Image (tube, rainbow, N blue to C red):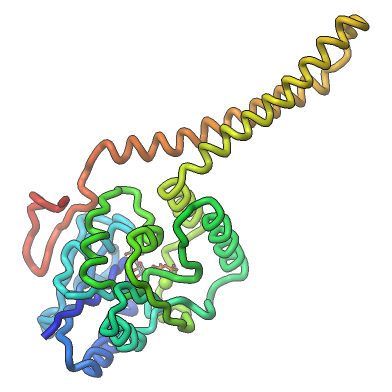
Amino acid sequence: MNLLTILVPAYNEEDVLQQLYDRLNKVISSVPSYQFEILFVNDGSKDHTLSIIKKIRERDKGVSYLNLSRNFGKEIAMIAGLDHAKGDAVIIIDADLQDPPELIPEMIKYWEMGYDDVYAKRKSRSGESWFKKWSSSTFYKLLQKITKIPIQENTGDFRLLDRRCVEALKQIRETQRYTKGMFSWIGYHKMELLFDRDSRAAGETKWNYARLVDLAIEGITSFTTAPLRLSALFGCVVSFFSFIYIIWIVTNTLLFGASVAGYPSLMTVVLFLGGIQLLSLGIIGEYLGRIFNETKRRPLYLIDEYNNQKALNRNTDI
Ligand code: UDP
Ligand code: MG
């Protein structure tokens, strides 16, 4: 019998875990032709998430868990889970029930038909402000324009991945991860399912705008070097006009002599060029920072405990 892993990254989710487990269980029993492993990745929660997971595991050995040594963020929690998933396919689902587990049987059906990556796309996003919706849609349009791989809009990490997709993702050992871009990057046969995204069942979102901006920069810098080219292009354009302006000033001075006036134009040009230089340096710095982080070659995460066993972390990185 085939084994499927349901991977649940969880950070401070004590209010919803039991509810999630109950709903997952119902779904699992409606698909009797498969065995299931529910793998919780506790991402350094500060509440009772871990003890609730342990209690669930005591009653149900189909449940495994991975306790990370601290909070590493969802992107890392996911790769930690993928590294430890045993299933022939892995279904990634949020702990907060914003992704309805009832969609899983349909995902499995498509997987049986031969699709490798069955992802859920939201029709609606209840419980999110118009500003979040607007900023996210603008970001995707921008990202789409400057990267060459299509990245699905309105799609989260809720998806079913065939084993070969999982193995592909496991080979991408970048520390600053933009997993959503990686799903597109690996390719394979993709299938889209539409669903209505609910509001959180309980607890609160861990995302704030600072984190979203962070992820946006990650998304751009990890998938394209277009900003570097853009700053070079901008430099060329500015130099071109400056050159014309220089010729004009020099001829003017030679023909008519110099007048001292010109403070406003001088100031404008100095400030403008200063701004552009700082911006370009910032862009270069952003990429340099990524290079720095990758060259450290640290393990992506450290495990505290895997299914009641203390981990030594000899071999977390593959
Ligand atoms: N999460 C995590 N580590 C973090 C932040 C979030 O594992 O540092 C998990 C969280 O428990 C949830 C999922 O990632 O299962 C999505 O988080 P959240 O609901 O806060 O994000 P949103 O749905 O608002 O985008
Ligand atoms: Mg959520």
